[in-house]
Length: 339
Ligand code: NAD
Ligand code: TYD
Image 1 (tube, rainbow, N blue to C red):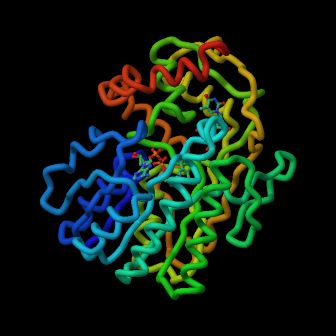
Image 2 (image 1 turned 90 degrees about the horizontal axis):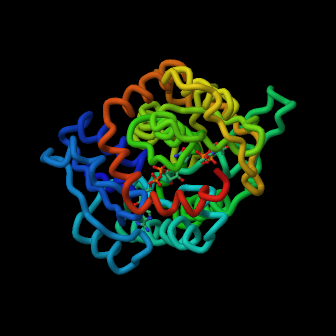
């Protein structure tokens, strides 16, 4: 197969490119990425010389460019990771989320339709909104109504609806995966886990929103990549699959786990103003993926967070380069006055 991976210079897309290039040497992997602040070619260093890998710089929302690329490359499948992905940025500037996450998806769908390409959309459990803290036996299933909270999740839900409409209206062979919060190597240090690891290592304060009681369901990125590969090859066309491994933790539990592993004091924790519209709890029911496709995660949170912390200790150059670049200014704008 010749597979187009969009957003492959980002966190999950980058891990997926590694996974696919190594697992399927006979397949061709083309990585298309615009290299926004979140895209980093350093992430691709371990695979960039492989004969079955190629990088192309470009915008998924650039219709002429995308149509030309599909004409030239004759892909068998596209897996769309490319997105603006950070909730806090979507609160600051929603429009770019509509442009990339909605318009970009529609352009890719049009190209997939014209060239008859199998399409997989990487979505999020945030499209379901949130769950209350006091009903721990409630989980998101694929039947849970879409009920978004942030401009980010609204853009992802819109994209999902377009994907499903291209199945129903045009018969395009599509699937969607909706996963919980990922963590693991190559995670950009604006997100909770890598932010807390990098700041704790520098003995800097750790900004916990509100009381730190919000719950996220943590999925190791390698388990996510395996799930997408399964869905792409064996998933039922037109279907949505939830991906998650029952690893719920409060933000405070996550931060304390990181501090303990790094032998740093809890006095580094700084409670800051809460995120507007902050979702309380995400929790995935992955039964459909497990029973239909036999998926099982290989990590639990304890093994996964230990591996992740070790990766950040072993790969300081990767994240220190990011922190010394454009992101440093953004961080100061976001948190400067609050810390
Ligand atoms: P990321 O922000 O790390 O990476 C996004 C990548 O997309 C970057 O490399 C960026 O340069 C690229 N990109 C942005 N705009 C583009 C455009 N117009 N054209 C081409 N490339 C563009 O994101 P991530 O965390 O790796 O998330 C990947 C996907 O998974 C996203 O669709 C996100 O919504 C979804 N998702 C992420 C999580 C998570 O926990 N990180 C959870 C659920 C779903
Ligand atoms: P994040 O990694 O931004 O993912 P998402 O908002 O998509 O779940 O945030 C995870 C949780 O951590 C979320 O409840 C917000 C919280 N959080 C903090 O408390 N402090 C921070 O500095 C960040 C970035 C997030």
